[in-house]
Image (tube, rainbow, N blue to C red; front, side, top):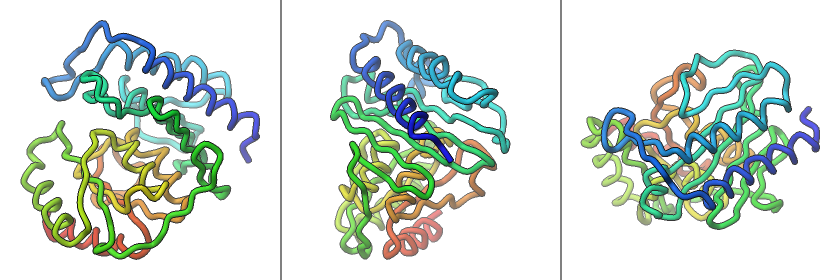
Length: 258
């Protein structure tokens, strides 16, 4: 059982990291192999801040984070961190990025906190204790696919998935209400939990892109599935999410068009 004190402290740390992002000017942008996959000095500052401040909360906890070398998941307490989800948005002053922190035990997410500093929105969930937006309980409404607005990601770091991605997006567009693409999977998934959209698909996501949001969606009554592996087996996977009415049809569309 997580203490209220620990939960409150984690939220405070994540919010402070988000405010650091919004209030810091980028000095350097580095390539991680190509012009699409980039990291800024602010990503590093945010990550270092998070690790430094989360580390004392749980003794000997492991850290998995986007901007560091990582091992496979273990059963030990583990923090999974995305210091800036939506880095490309951030480098363009396209104000749609987020900070994401998940706490795991036995490879299961037990606490998830995501913060969008531009809207001052804190999404968080505690295992078996609900999902919240700025303290208000979230509950996903079940909708059929034809009634659903679907968020889609384009996996820009793996452009060989382009044909599959756009095949899937076309079918979701034709069978659903409409589609959206924002550049931040964390925000997309949190918006699903808040009822602002109704489904999600991306051909490849890293574990730090959705660990916290996975719990936020599930505690709000939604469903998140990995279609090319099991949770915790590897760092990059194909992800869909939705509600109990539309998830099976989203899954069928993705699997038929891979």
